[in-house]
Length: 395
Image 1 (cartoon, helix red, strand yellow):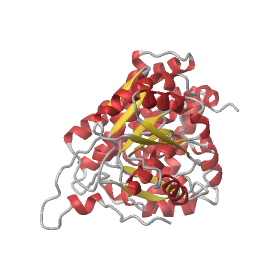
Image 2 (spheres, helix red, strand yellow):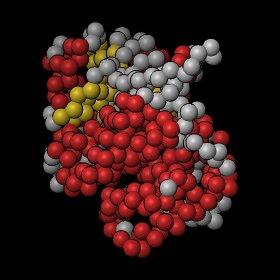
Image 3 (cartoon, one colour):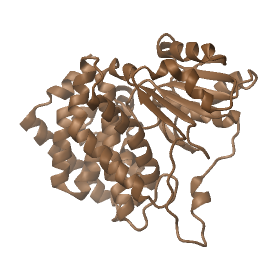
């Protein structure tokens, strides 16, 4: 395996001889709109590179990636294509580095979903080149951040890798998002909804830290709150637009919330219980194999809110019901008495993000939150039904 010196932003910002500073990080540039993919060659003129490695799945290479390559070539740039294997694992990363290191690439473009994007960041770091991120879905907030989530080859969460720089350029084409499955947009809403509730506890806890190991900024916290407000007011309308393959102001706003607002919010605002739960749900094969990251985060958000404010949990649960996100265990193929729950609780309690909660999270308290979340979620389903959820999960 290629060895890379680990970068820990907390070692940069959390100096022992001073008060923990507030730190804000973000991508250098973010471009969003219909048809922007075809202008990639124009946008990369902002960078100093001549040969671009293109990391994309086989499926993506037959679609949106061809637009990227055509635009780059027509603007006079060379390209080298690498096929992403599907998992952001160290094995995949090392294989891609070995493939690209001798081909003269001086920038990398990652085109695809969250795992392809995160693998691209790791590969670019090892190659010592900047990265351009082009998400093909609005299903998560990975594109803008300087952090990648790592998994085993089987898809089990193993940790995270941090980088000194955020992406040089993020390009989001809403024509592609409008033609994707609404389930992916809904998952992005689930991931992004957690941003406000996690950032809020981080800034309210004097000991809370952002993802970069610093104190959250007011800017990131405000962005996180606007993110949640946008989703709750326009999320359902945006999903309707995707079902019709239409680009509307609501869709543009929700895509920006899912990607840019949530990305800045989680990185400079911080994480808490919601992501501690979601990242460890991947240890259960039937959950990992059948549910998206944002769907797991939605469940984690319900658990976190159950620990904080039952009324607010009810409000968010009703919104999740409207857009088809999970709000009870059965909606991620689990039950309260499953044997996997106890090991899951153990792993959640070991997650450093738990320390950002403004009170001690005990096993008893976490167990109760799981139970309260499940009871509330089932009550909402009984009252409102689960037609939106079922529509997204049809085979």
